[in-house]
Length: 318
Image (cartoon, rainbow, N blue to C red):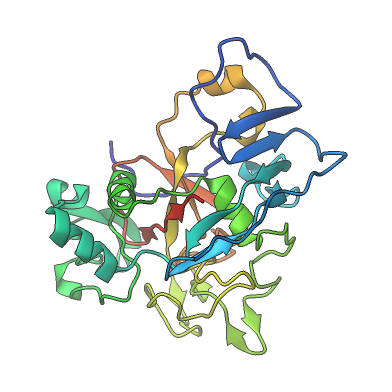
């Protein structure tokens, strides 16, 4: 069954775990680029952070380092907080755009899952309910009657499977949500609510596209947008990344699991979930119901789901 609403998401682990591992561990090699720790390491070994010879256009170098993932003050799915060591990587500066996705479709003839299904998930602001809208797809994310999306807007109505296909074509991959949070914390464990600080306004200027009002009743649009904004409309984080808060949720590579399972291979191996993680919040988020655009905010959905407020960005390994 296709899901319309983002469910609460937790972190991933590799499912290919050693058969000899069981129960909680103090630390584990989570992936080739990430080590997780049950407690803050007593000694932190500085990672190798030599800059690559060239950073591809449109990407940002994310230095490796230690980060505390999650939030002790957050909601249940963000607990318990834990430490990770992340190797450096390259991350798209902004969400993949409609124009970039169109180049992929034109080069490959790819057809998205929303196009195969004939519809995508759209919020009806009259009924204030989510539903499947005929004709909604990456070109018409809110439905055909709303007109086509501009080339510089983040591509949405793409499923996790669609995002995976694009990333493979581009010679990249989707980020694990641990990598995503490390980047949102500016690669140096910044402990603010958002990448740029504890407020969405800096000197009177908005730094993110979110819902300005009471969802779903009214949106004052004081940040200048009601739906998705062109990528980069709100500047960049200290690390140089755009739209890490708000605009559209972003698919991540990993499965939706609980943080409590991270150090427990038995719990991970037995997890029945098929949902994939999403990060960053969207233009539909506001603190009264979804403060998902915080650095530690999380969501998830099944891999075939396509929604009007979910897109993605990609990682390139060094």
